[in-house]
Length: 235
Length: 258
Image (cartoon, rainbow over all chains, first blue to last red; front, top):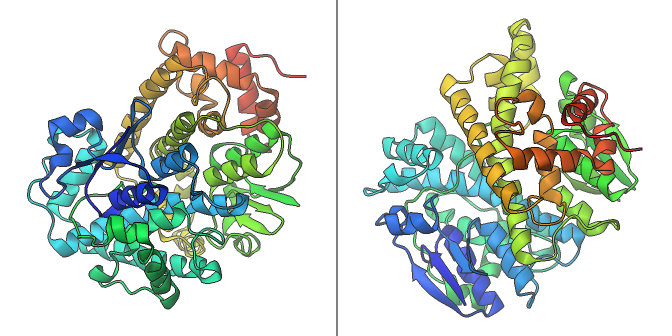
């Protein structure tokens, strides 16, 4: 039996909820209150010392790293296939998975944090050094430079979505895939942050949003002030 | 037609090169000299506008992300499979590569470039450095190069990188105590990814990576260095990497393959 610890239909957790719905998989839902800092509770840190959702319990172990859990689900439960229809599409799936984690999610977290004024109850003391440092920096507040460079990175991401979705309507090859599932919950937050999406990206977002599994799993996605993955430290 | 643009056969450049030599896939190799900043030349920017190496071009399909390109090479070409069949071990393989790509390799790159490249830039004229910086397309890369060229990497960042590298040795020792390779019983992309950056540890970090302190890492380094495919890949350098890999093999008592 699969269990999913998740922060509700937002960010990386929304990608997991969508993928499980697309695959038609039954799972036990374990919601974690991100706004209340439950991801930094002692009980949750036992499951994932990094204090990040989602965590998928399967095969007797706790899987972390959203994009790689998505690939795991696609490989362990091949129907319907969501990994890309040929090697080129599968490369694009991997490229997008990485880009979401290393460029989109960290910058989105900074821009969103700045807009929402942060979170009160972060309790970073139990985290390992790198995550604790990231949260302490967030609690001190990001500089104007950091916020504007995060917003520029997101504008560039919007352009990349637009460019890649223009050819087929999807991010990786001719079919809907894990690339769309990984990117969608993040791009869906851009409008609330005042970051404009070019027409092709807007159409892509609407195309993903109208899928029954997406409507079911992530129809209404709240904004939550929480830190994403770390921004690259060296280029 | 398969064309590969890399610098020396280590770090990100090493990933597709070592992978292709392991699978024995023929390709045309274009050497891009990062020492001369050739990755920012107009000729290379025409292939990858981001100005990052490696680039792998297969029948016109351009790939510029090194770890996804390794997955592509294993996916698209015949030869021994470099990914485990089991989904859980594949997850493990990718998480190891993610940790290496996001945490360990950038830390080592920050430390090594500050030790090796930064002193050279101290001699270079400021206007010249500004001109070089102007050629770098990605803002995050430009920021890193600026810190490097002007000796502005904060000490706290260097210390944090040192901490991360030290921590990774413990983690890899634990992973390799569980299985002979990083993704189980068989050699995989994870081993290539980590070897591309860690191949020299017994020489560069002798106090941390030796038979007493890290026996499982040392056994893994010997297993990997003994592979003819990796030896061929490490043999393709024009700078000091090829010699360094051969020196490390001797240090480890690993024979050169025929």
